[in-house]
Amino acid sequence: MKLVHSIALVLVAVIALAIGYYAGTQTKGTPVAEMVGSVTGEQSDADMTKDESRVLATVNGESLTEKDVEELYQSLPPQYRQAPIAFIKAQLLEQLISMEVIAQAAEKEKMEDQPEFQARLDNVKTQLMQEYYLKAKLKELVTDDKIKTEYDKFAADFKSQEEVHARHILLKTEKEANDMIKLLDEGKDFQDLAKQYSTGPSAKSGGDLGYFTKDRMVPEFADAAFAMNKGEYSKKPIKTQFGWHVIKVEDKRETKAPSFEEKKAEIQNKLTNDTVEKLVEDLKKAAKIEIIKPEKDEKADDAAKADESKDKDGDADAKEGDGNEEKKD
Image 1 (tube, helix red, strand yellow):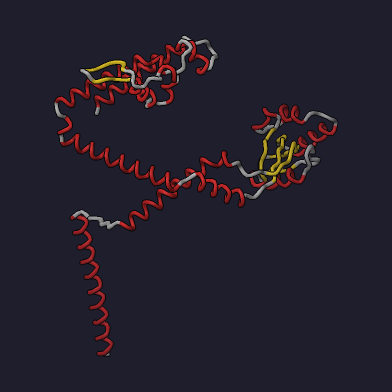
Image 2: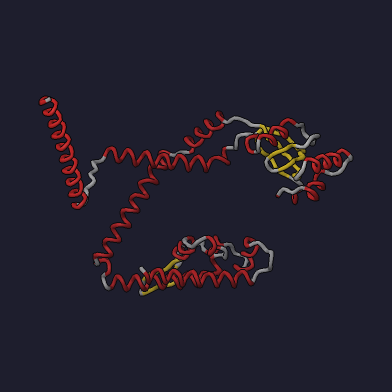
């Protein structure tokens, strides 16, 4: 296992160097997609791997094909697929050769007969069966029609809310806020004043707070902003826990339900999780499951039960004694 891991690390290192060289040969600012033609001689990756059965090398008579190279390339992490396959093809083929000579050596020494190998193989088989079983069930149960049905329910239940797009100037004192309103009355630009005088983090963007619903702001601020019309600014300062505000409403709108495409992935994920959870629960209910406690735990339980029984007997004896004393009296 350590050897395979080491080979994988070597492959990653070699490909990283190749990608670094590849990036260095390109003009700065040129998108990767535009670089492909120059590297591959105007041939696309699809053209380079069109004949998947074409043999690229043999190892003791075993063929390594274009398809093998493509599969190894696709198994790489995304960051190592920045360069076109043609550019790192030699490194990929060399890795395949390394993997093949190790596999042949292992087969020659009958490593598959080793108990540890068989145990790992059984484990992999079990994992694959679980994976393919769930895939088959999810394909059957989580369909596009079901996703669309769930979206339609969501859209029907969606409640539109009013949103306000506002700017504000945050100041420390009421006097400063009143002075700001006077400047606005004189025709000064709100954004310029916000950039110059506001103490809030939005000062750099001219006090821009973007769109927000009423529940996202503190009540005093929200009440004032939502009571104003588009284009208006507050004629009186608004006091909140953060200081004194002068607000300008840039726009108002009603929120809309996200589109099907925007919600599809989220709904699919939820349906998948819910389906797997229910499937597992149903399988558990149908199965005969027995949890075997370790022997030491059973002994501990027996001891606890014995102590509990003694306590009950002691309580019973005490009550009987009390009864006898009462009779004597």
